[in-house]
Image (tube, rainbow, N blue to C red; front, side):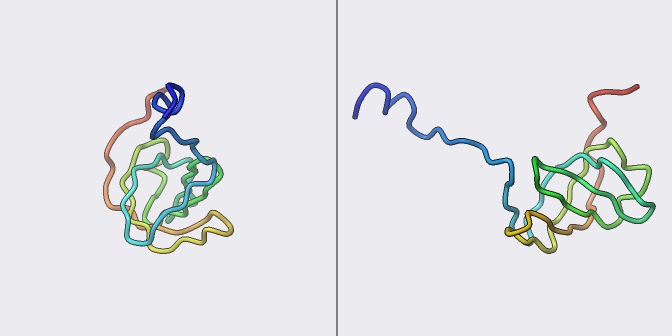
Length: 90
């Protein structure tokens, strides 16, 4: 194996459309809420989060993925808990 090959071993590019598995738990920031559910964006992937009301906007939350369509890079999940605050407070 070449020096460059050894140096780059295990490296990979991140995708702007990560796939999520049903049942997995992920930490995301809620971008907006319509009152009963919120939306989180992970790159170009969109996740509708049930139970993420206005009090969760700009907060980091843990979500359990309930469904995901890899073709459209969109899915749904349920709010488990708030795990952090935004790193930018206005």
